[in-house]
Image 1 (cartoon, rainbow, N blue to C red):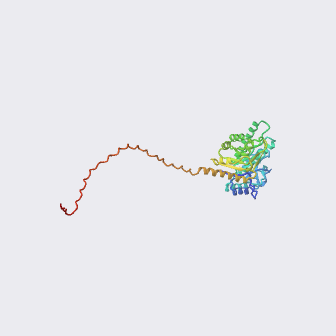
Image 2: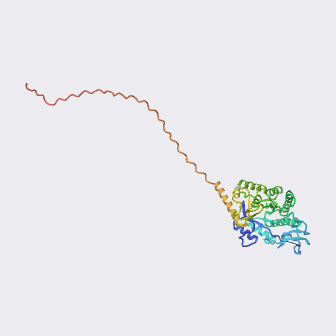
Amino acid sequence: MIRFGPAGIPLSCKGRTLRDGISDVHHLGLTAMEVQFIKVNPLTRVVLEEEVGKLPFEVPTQLMVEVGETTREAADPAALKTPLKRRQNVTSLTWSLAKDYADLAQTRALARALDVRLSLHAPYYVDFFGSEEARDRSIRQIQWAGLLASGLGAGLNVTHLGFYGGGSRADSVHELSQLARELESWLQRVTDGQVHLAVEPSGHPDVFGSREEVLELAHQVRGIVPVLNLPHLAARERTAFSDTVQLQALVDQFVEASRGDLYLNFSGVEFYGPTEFRLTPIKRGLVRFDNLAELLAERDYDVTVISSSPLLEHDGMYLKLLYERALTRRWTKKHAPPPPKAPVPPPKVTAPVKKPAPPARPPARPVARPRRPAARAKRPSGKRTRGRR
């Protein structure tokens, strides 16, 4: 199955709640949506008396994402599944799209009823090589995004891995790969394997996320899903992927690394300097979706196509239209009536071979017929008179 949807609440949505956005996506004929978890507002406090004995997911009007004895200790997934105790510290999020886990559950039920598949994008800015505080904040934000994704029923927690460190590029890639492995393991434990870490490539050469790095990470760490963000790869490699053979090889690599399904992010892109680019509406971008639509029409695996263009749902519907056109051409070609048979030429009539004429016979001599005797003259009737002498 193939799904199309926007990266965020549709621009045309009158209500700005998450459930309003899911309903609008459904009414527009789309079947996917990437929820944007951008602004993070954490609050750490002591457990209240009325909260003692309750599970963190059961506390009303609270999105509890961490429970611990101190605020500096690493987040323990097991603590989120045990009743709250006195003098424990809890960290709650204030999120405009949901107020508690019951709210997330209602949103999850609506998305399933309308057949809209959800994914969630973690905060865009992460920094694992800055200060200790920045590193800790980046790790926890990705973990918190995984908890929200689990509450929404989203299967993917999409994220970047941030800038390279100050050392060698190989050392930075190795350390980021270890961090991604730990984050994926944490998500598997806390969400019971329902949410996976999805790593996105980056268009900036100073940020982790080249084609080779993302694919190698997906092959090394089981469960991590590579995101085929075509405009970012086009900006990183400075190519428009106009060659069908080149594009087919790229798609095959990501399908193999993701073990069957493909999560694809698309928008228009324009190049400026050696490292400068910007995302644009699809019709203005250098990368065209037409060739990719032809390839997807021939696929035998599931695909989710997310529109990250500035036009969001408008370009999401346009992507779906281009795919349906490609699918129609493929169906027409496959089920076209057989060509009419060429008319059978009439058999050639060969002129009969003329036999040589037999030699001419000498003319036959006429046979002399016997003559009939002449008829005697009749004597006149009457008596003969003698004359006188």
